[in-house]
Image: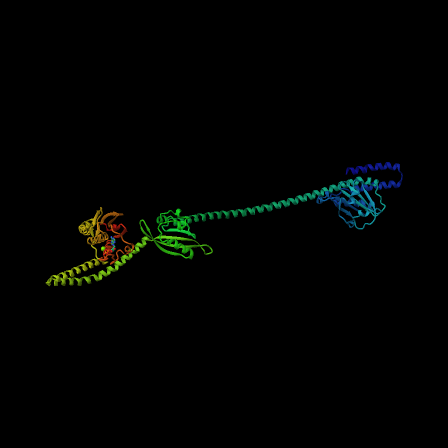
Length: 594
Ligand SMILES: Nc1ncnc2c1ncn2[C@@H]1O[C@H](COP(=O)(O)OP(=O)(O)O)[C@@H](O)[C@H]1O
Ligand SMILES: [Mg+2]
């Protein structure tokens, strides 16, 4: 501003000097008019910080005074905040507006190259290049003047006058005003830029704030979600842990159930390979479960299966896919044992058998019990018969015997007398059998008194020994220290005699029968062992059945009577037999103790 004023103040002084030298009135008037024009133009500059307003005020003074019909201000894009990236020049103001055709042109356009490095460029319609300078509507001829606005851009002015001259003198006069105009435009631009920048920054800040707030709410939401999720997860973990532990417990329970089961539990695959065996297998086969698992059934070599039934049944279950139950017996060092086996096929999804579960139960005790029951049953039936018909037969027989003896005495012939004697003997024998038979009667009264088994044995020993001697055998007696029992002496005597008689009858010459008494598990035990050939299994099963005998002259009542007597004493008979002899044990339970 200061510069503008200084040039304006200095100029009148210079003018005064000129006026003295050139008295041409016209010239003086022109100079004064120029001065006031420049002064006015200077005043129009920088009155507004608004770019368009600034341009308008400037052109409003410039154009009418110089008779310009069109004026336009072009600014290089790099000075425009919103276009700083491009290489063009943009029209930012034109007066009047309806002339405007182009609003953007490259810097390489003749309009701008023409004035590069110069104070001004003029071109009129007589020049051929004129058309390339036109970028407005409605212009065909006249003169264009292009003036640089510092580094900022260009001022393009137009007058319809083809002969308009913008010479160096005019240019010189206009130069400082245009420079100042350029500076003030620069100010407007930087103001605009600043405002744009502030606006931009505000907007950015607002956006940033919004984004931050959004972020915060999202973080909060996400945190809430995460907390909830975490709680769910925690609950799930706790739940899962609980389930796991109860599952583990359950598994342990099942495992204990299987491992401690006295039944043998095995699982076989289709190739008859053992997948699992529980510890119970050891008792039956003597083999450890771990030695059996993984082996094929053919390689297990239990040494107890003679007919390979197990393999046969297993294969049939795999082929048929149906359950199977069967019983088998196996000889052990401690006697025959009976097993009941259940094979259950296990299927894959396609219903094909993949494995077989086998459960084998030792039913030996059950089997023996069943036999005992059957025997007692048979005894019971016979006992009833004995009770009902025994007396009916014996009474008439006693009458017959009496008459026989009566007639015998009257007979004179020795031969007849002998015949009658044989008849009486036969009746006596029949009577003896009936007496024995009658002792089977179930409801026979027993006369239990305090007795010592050893004493009973001692009393009948001479009789037994005489019998043994007669057969060429001998008796060995080992009487242990035993407590007194409640016994029916006559019956026990009969029982011992029957057992010893059978023992003697089982042996050939020179055999020894051993009679022992001792205490075992708080029971008094009587054992009678012989050195005979033992009892085969078919006979063994029928021992004690009335009238079952393998002897030519046997009655088959001896053992039946023994079992019956022992049952009345609530005692028990056990038999052990083998090729080297047989042992009969009579065990008196503690309740017989006196
Ligand atoms: N100690 C034994 N040794 C071998 N077999 C025996 C023995 N005791 C009993 N028996 C068998 O039991 C069967 C039945 O015996 P028992 O009832 O006494 O009738 P009996 O002696 O009249 O044949 C005998 O025929 C015999 O086959
Ligand atoms: Mg007998």
